Length: 235
Ligand SMILES: Nc1ncnc2c1ncn2[C@@H]1O[C@H](COP(=O)(O)OP(=O)(O)OP(=O)(O)O)[C@@H](O)[C@H]1O
Ligand SMILES: [Mg+2]
Image (cartoon, rainbow, N blue to C red; front, side, top):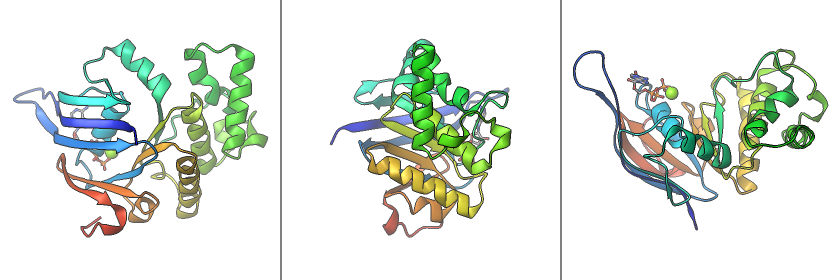
């Protein structure tokens, strides 16, 4: 199986106003193969979002090597990273991050503008994606006119629009009730069954159980990496 993600001796420190930089990720190593479904867990402040932002090319590591599909992305400049994000990664956030004054169709089509599609092709593809996440009848609405779970579906449709192999999600169910969270996880499971590689941060053991593999991080260090079902530690 092809490796989608390879992380080797990854370190991330944040500069401090005074004194030494503050180390957040410390010698993190793992690889993720195409088609895997991975949950990342760990206490608050352990570095999960820092890791996800690095995997999503939204931030760069202090040292170490990060490869996507065998290509080294650590060390790329901003423009190169923007291209990798646009072509290879779909990112889903806890707070949905939708544009509130634009229709669902516009929200989903936005990444296509950057990818250079014409207007008609943008709307055709965006409405197909909204259909794919079960929102065919809502494309003209605004985010404020639909529920939180539906807003997260829109964000997932937007993440899927450039057909990335890799979907990254940082606490995608953190703002949703239990029933809606399960609906969203069923959607991620369906995407995984369709061949997408999924890496998802969560605080909830019930949500992590949708994944097959768990990476548990404490204080910037990987403490467990293996099947979700065999994890015996505190979640
Ligand atoms: N931009 C930044 N500058 C300085 N320190 C930061 C920055 N971002 C995060 N940190 C610090 O890095 C550590 C890890 O933060 P991170 O957000 O990655 O944790 P997390 O595991 O996602 O936590 P949570 O479960 O609360 O979301 C924390 O101590 C945080 O305060
Ligand atoms: Mg976080």
